[in-house]
Image (cartoon, rainbow, N blue to C red; front, side):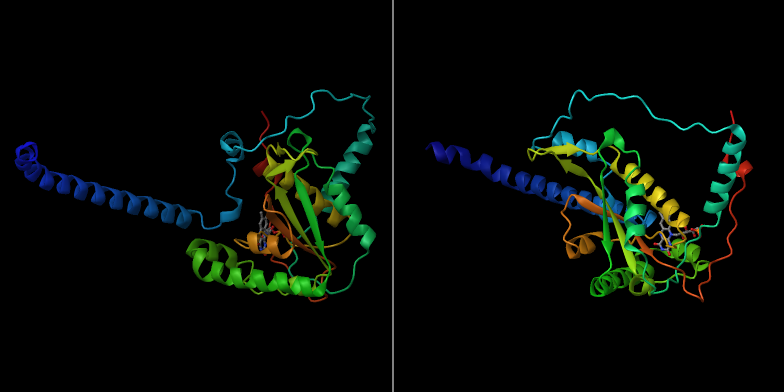
Length: 294
Ligand SMILES: Cc1cc2nc3c(=O)[nH]c(=O)nc-3n(C[C@H](O)[C@H](O)[C@H](O)COP(=O)(O)O)c2cc1C
């Protein structure tokens, strides 16, 4: 009796329910499509942003992460600062000489296979390791590759990905901007350069007790270290080209046995220039174009 009473209401409700479910399904699909298109659009606008490096939201991750995070030590000894002061004449001379040295630096894409002294590579990396870093976290790993087989494997990965970058991922504007540099996906220097230095940023660290440590501003810190490394290489008469192998990071990280919290930022092939090396004739902006005094 009770069941029979409900039957007309159920008959009326079923089409209404079906209609509501249909509207919901259409809405969900439309939204999913819109999100996918927006993501595609973002990738098209900035095709040079490396998927693996998209983690400038590190600090939010920290808050959301269930893992334990290590607080840093609260006190540390402070000691007198040791400083060398130069007479103003000498300051002017040193600044001029340093500028002239760095102004000769060029990105060189033709590197000879002549070996470089091990001690020099150690010292330039030690120099890079003097860089300032957010809260003194030193969030960098410099992987030095000399083994010819390993260099060749790195070349194979990079050339494979770079060909896709040039042909599909980069977009017309980027390909046009690179034309003047005459670069393409063939990277002979990855075999010929006696040393490849791959610089990884550690998106977080680990304390002695295994808890994670926040690496504040890790990308800026590692970029500063890379700048010092470039200056140190120039200082000893070695050449390199700053490269950011797009979307190669995860494969190179696995090849080199580095852990997942390390992300490849920059790869520097290092050596002497080959005899036939050429560079694009570029002009640098003058002081009046780069400096504003307030
Ligand atoms: C962040 C960054 C990424 C770069 N990526 C590449 C690269 O992937 N391949 C390349 O051949 N050069 C690369 N370069 C080198 C630039 O093309 C070069 O610095 C620029 O053309 C100026 O030339 P110069 O270094 O001789 O002054 C990169 C430079 C920087 C700073």
